[in-house]
Length: 152
Image (cartoon, rainbow, N blue to C red; front, side, top):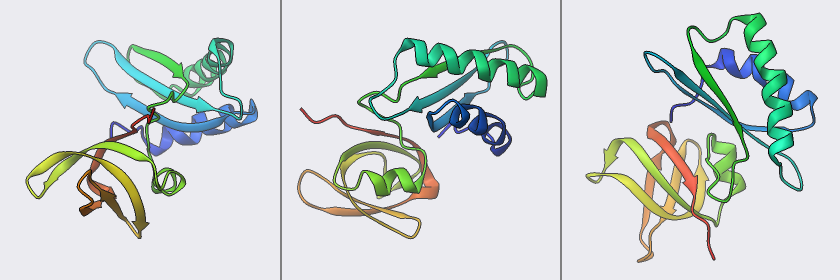
């Protein structure tokens, strides 16, 4: 996961929560010319463009004062959407029973890309069930990226 540093979480979380939103997660893509800082917010009933703009303006001001991101960067504030990114073990626990697609940094059984239903979270291990009913134990520490798979 291109998850942001703890410093960015410490700066951004209070701003987002003081506005009445849940901070779902932060991604930081460090690039030579223009980095990308993406913040996912949510609240009961969802968020719209005005909510994202409000959070963007507030966070932008705090980031400028704190000088928390070096160089040029683009700030995006977004709803997590139907294919919600999962950043923490608590997110996986919250969505037990849901379908997920994830990519691992280190292959398990020769695979980095996995898709299946979250069956359980044990300590730091995700238990995923595939389409054939097979269960796999995947270490959370090795998750590079994870998103819910919408079910229609």
